[in-house]
Length: 357
Image 1 (cartoon, helix red, strand yellow):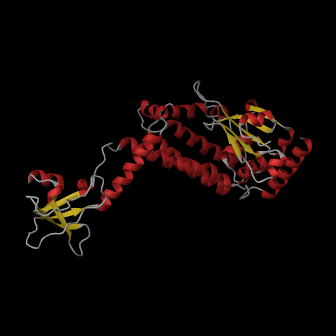
Image 2 (cartoon, rainbow, N blue to C red):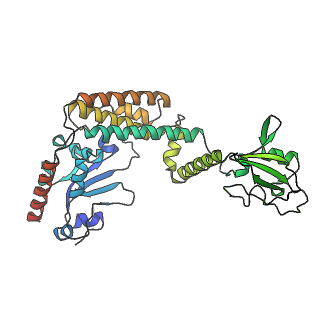
Image 3 (cartoon, one colour):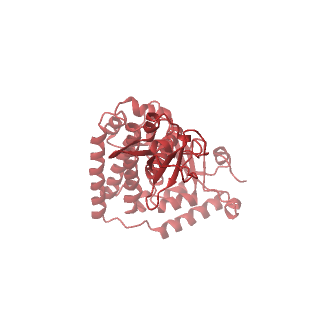
């Protein structure tokens, strides 16, 4: 029978390994922390041999995730941090382990790929922290600007915003007509129709227009001004506006409130995991071991509580990242995991499981 849910895996006895993961495994959990579970299952033989392969099954929040044995080994070959951590789970966190699973020992598959999977992910988190800090300090107003806010009228030896020019001359944008000026990108001749005789198109045809409007101008009308539309500036603003409000719509509000509450304006939980990953990468390079339960728990929890300044942590993280890179240069770990060994173990365990079940 094809399993569809975690309960199906349990009812059909398909789970070969499961353990508590995340903060409770690292030792950085708080009383309010969720309990994350990760595990490995084996598909029933008839399902595995058919077309409908299932790589993983998880709950709605992804707090509980089970990987099919083949997917598990595939990720192990990539030195995926989640999988390497799972293999090195503290004994107190292991909920179930079939004897067949004993052949998978993290020490057998450590390689210099961990530099990219652990430290590389940490580097992305540092970049993410910078982006979050920038969003917090540079919010974008909910009221969206229009192209009119990026138009300027040449006046004297300089320019003034179009809105101010219109206000000063007691005009509306609909009374204006624009014509391209040859060889001058973004620059337009501006004509006025104060009596609304010529059906000018205005500066824009509609409020959310992304381009200025052009009009047919009678030859007898004289040019009133020269207008410049900063289209590149408008495009940059639109991109920033979308990124910011998409982030607002998708962000975890309780986590964001925690970020704001400690007053340091960085995602403390994200920064804590950055340092944890860097420390684990350093362990792999120097000790050839994946140490899940972190010995510097107090330091990591201080980061989570927001007891450090943002810039101070960024400097420390960059310095540690350099240490990790140098440590992997000096390490005699293989460049990649032994894929042939992994493949042979996968075949061996799967065959044995099917024979027994």
